[in-house]
Image (cartoon, rainbow, N blue to C red; front, side):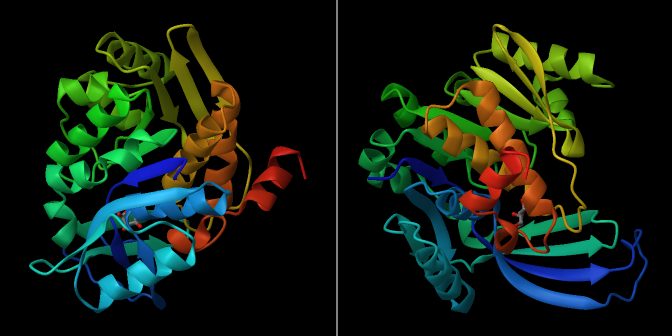
Length: 305
Ligand code: RIB
């Protein structure tokens, strides 16, 4: 049985490295290209598995070459893929990613099969969800499927960790089923419907979301760490200073670290610190999924090594 069940997207990432990101209508000569497994759901599943959790992944891939490769890669990471559906009508999701030398990036996703994840797919995995400690969701899958997963988990007392990217509108019922919402400062503002200028604004927006039913909010602040807000108050949890070369997937590493720590029943602030360590390590290496850290290096960073 899985400790962590991830319901989400799985893409093949097509990554171009460039001296700088192009502006609209501009062509820039890049210097590197690689493909790597990606997708926020799949990244979080692999990150959680590398941290030692038993992980099951629920999603959809196309029945094509990318799909076959991605499935094998997940299996090689020890992720349970019995609920990963091979879709014969849509291709595997693809993400076109550009990363500039500073580590900044842009991402465009063609969802393909990810967009066909259904409530029925989720129902078929209901027992696995009910037996988990944490269910992890992102916003790269259709809302009805995510909502169903959240409802099944919440009804069974399983914690729902919901990472709110890429930002879009979500139903109130999904917020009410969420134990911990993970979002960057802009997403926290967007979800709360408030303009966010500074940390006080982030806290206000998080409180608004908690009033609407979210259990707690973790606002990620990049290299500065995160702000953890629940009904008892708001705490800053400092980040780790590293040399970032590619931040693609760093947010996924953060969320997986937080989720695994919560599944291990660590206190909230310690779980956020674990998320910070995972996010920092992921930013030091190129690629999303290839950069996900392993338990030993996270433990070393957390212990000050
Ligand atoms: O969070 C990073 C991920 O976003 C990439 O792996 C890409 O596939 C997109 O889903």
